[in-house]
Length: 247
Image 1 (cartoon, rainbow, N blue to C red):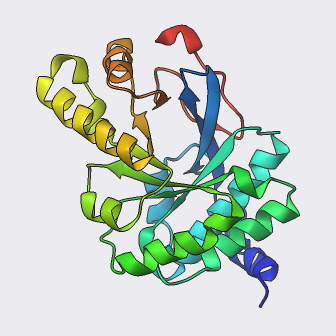
Image 2: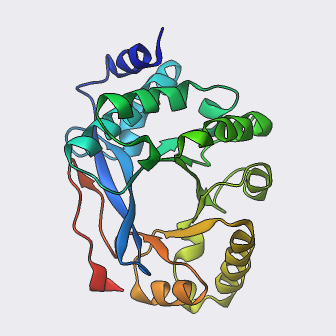
């Protein structure tokens, strides 16, 4: 089966059960949109957890593939000019290439530039094969896509994952971002982490930002990329306007 027919197969059976919302990741230093993250939603507004709860565990990978294909199709139709951030589970990537090949086939089919694809490794499960995960990303980096680690500091792997695989971008989890302006411990932790990423040539995104005071502190620590309700909420089947002056 070719990559393109795999993409077709992976969307079959899920077509009427979900759609995608998009939330911008903003670059405040450049005052431009760095990327839009694609987030699965139900057809009547259900959140991601509710949608995923309806998926048979045996079809999990196929459903994730369908989500990525749908996100690329919608991003192209909406005229998205930023990067498109696609979530991937680490064990869907480690030691295999299908995830990347399906996304690239969809990008070609829907005329979306491959070098605008951004793959976010979510930390929702323990990584079973770190070397395989790192090797898969190294293999496909030559196609020009952006790599990212999501929710850093919230769940599994953490620095173990970062030591095995140095992505282009790391997202600081909202648990470290929330109320950082009144918590010197969080300030110290994030300051050290941003310095580490800077030495490794990794850009940092602060996610879950809801207060201008948080942005002020994070920018002072060297963070320029932000995602959160302060700037825009996820919007189904549309690219939301950014509240640039909120910060």
